[in-house]
Image (cartoon, rainbow over all chains, first blue to last red; front, top):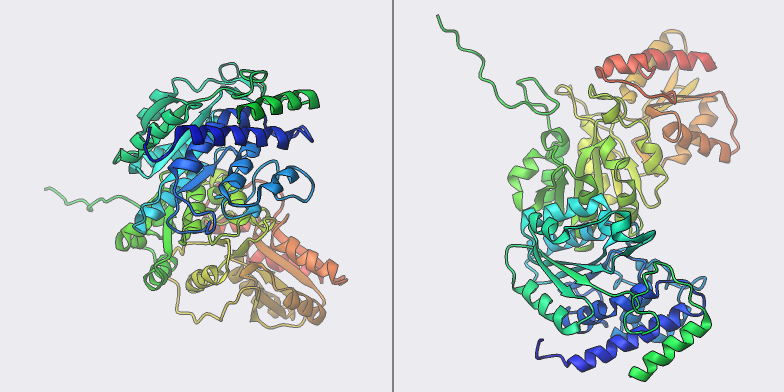
Length: 275
Length: 323
């Protein structure tokens, strides 16, 4: 655990983000609940501790860039951006309403802090690599973080990109898979297993770590190791639990979840009690 | 007794002769890059066939052979463009459009980034057959918002292609053809975005063409002149945006029109001209000459152009059929 961040503060932020997720999805039932709750610790650790950025100057050329290539996981993404100060959190209530820039799949029309318009799966890693190569050419020290979905790694372009990142030794790149083990039609091993994923990524030239993706301290340590790794891109397999942080939802492996009012109310009460 | 054999060397993917082909596009790109350090180049492992060998050798820090991985190439170019670079991406027309349309739309066109997509082997102009032929690329790329499309009628216009690509503040598709021989001396007319060029004047019919069909249209026009038919020939190098004013003025002036393209008759130049005429309320004798909604085959370019009716013979017959 890095000394410059108070772990308890970060955990409180993660809880606050989870509460936003519940509040954003509850009105319409549209959006990812389980995935958002599960990824809250990845988002908190990256946006509130690891990555350097300036919400008042989102196009700052020397910022670290975070790419959400699985751009469907927007409730947690927007909650993070709002709490981090990129826009007013009041706008979160417009999530998936007609005319809102807070679309169900993120688009850069929301602002430049959406580093690329992804959602057509498998594309974000390539964009991050292009930025990483340009940064090296331009002598910048920026780092490039990619949050990818586990099911998304079935896309062929991901492996084209991984091959190039490994071959070129892009050590300013860190690929984080949100390994919640569920894709659209069910459990990953039932659809098409990625395993042995660590071996695959290592053979593509990545320095690999497998961590508890719901443990902020562990995630921060993993980013430290990734930052200190030279000559190789880093891969972090972050094992996450769907619905993490809400007892009644934790571990429910539903890609799409019906989210009736009474469930949302109970989740909200549970999260508020933690704050 | 022993006879010295010709020294063998690695052949270029396309050029099997011992005479290097001119590299008018590649030279122009290097010259532009020497003036503007934002220009970078990517190539999916087809370096001499896309004329990027000089860029690779003279500006190695700004060149990336991505391997045979076009989708990743376009995505990376999006990232480079987001970082202040102007990436030129290179492969064959078939692979750099059809294969990566989703990457082009999401990582170049939607964000309106200066990603320049440069394809070689336009239409049927390759011996490599259906897999390498792009007869629907213009149709596809024309439907992509923010995208401009330019196609030179010969190597004398290749330098202008680089200029136009840089002048368009967004994504561009260049539909390039490598010259087979060193072209004869030729003074090109000035090309502009959204402007066609009148290459021959005539008052009986207008032939609007682009790319390698322009020279065939000019030959056809001379053949028609022998029969007393004077054709205006337009080189529509700017396929998108297209010169609507010149199309409408020419229709009014000549009263008959054909379009000629090294592309399917569906969705390309012929469609673009038809759309312009219809919306202007102009009815006139009209025909699209192009690949007639069919797949082709590998062969020499002259053979294929004749077989599929897009050479001077096909153009002459089409013009006569509507007059």
